[in-house]
Length: 375
Image (cartoon, rainbow, N blue to C red; front, side):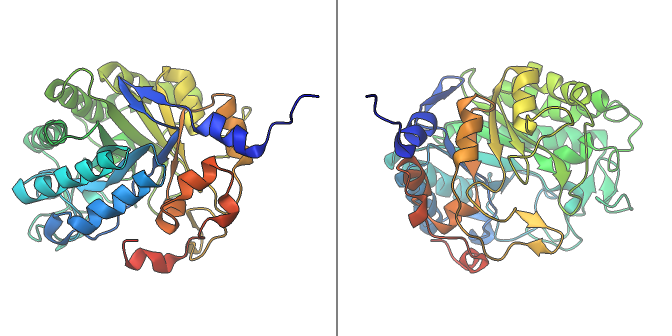
């Protein structure tokens, strides 16, 4: 009689497989999703940040995508406690983070970030810097800050390229460009926030120009085999029903220029990974991205939790750990390649090892109080 496959062997077989992104071999299919923690005073990640990420690598995570890090532009950020990815002290701190993660067996990429017009007047780290976006509009479509000039656009593109080069120079395994959630790159994509009449505005294909030029500049600043990941989403902060693309054809017009410019993998952000993106097909956003581009894809969204990331009443305060059978079903049929895990990994640094060993019943459940410290 043949032995019956156990849940443990199935999880290890599906999630435990190595994966390659442009020559970077990640030891398994579990990534840590980027999550802003604000534990880097004056933009400098310290020993506690290095230990925080290293614990997740030691706990079995294959690829760590760091919290968003500000590129070198005065309007890029909105907090004194979010890390920078420029300047001698922040880069030295990040170098130690990368070394700690590597020593624990993981791979790590920084997420490079510009918040754009989500910034409020007077926010740190540069309090005199105004909010800046493609058209001087906030996510509600109302006037906010100033519209980036052509010279401003060039400065921001150059800042992303410098940060990517610094990432490679300081021992990181690749970079992720934050083009999601209503931040600057995504503001160029979205017609509510991009009303430009120059070459960076107009139809969706034209609105991808800013992102495409960032990818091209980054690709030129790093080695050919240095992975470039691009994060995208339909939803925006506080606008959960937003859509860049209403059908696969529109999505392809967004993705094709980015893939051609040199993106190696796409990180498709959804709030619930199990929901279909378009009517008539069960594929989620990451599944559609993979189908349309042929590129590697990361999916994300309330993995292992009984409550979604955010809902009509705001952030979920507590969650209960759940199984991952549905996730394994989707990954077994190669819908997407890597799954990124967020709050479950804040709650339990060993979540990945427990998932691989079919021990999620032992995982520590998430509670919003955990955000007050780095565990």
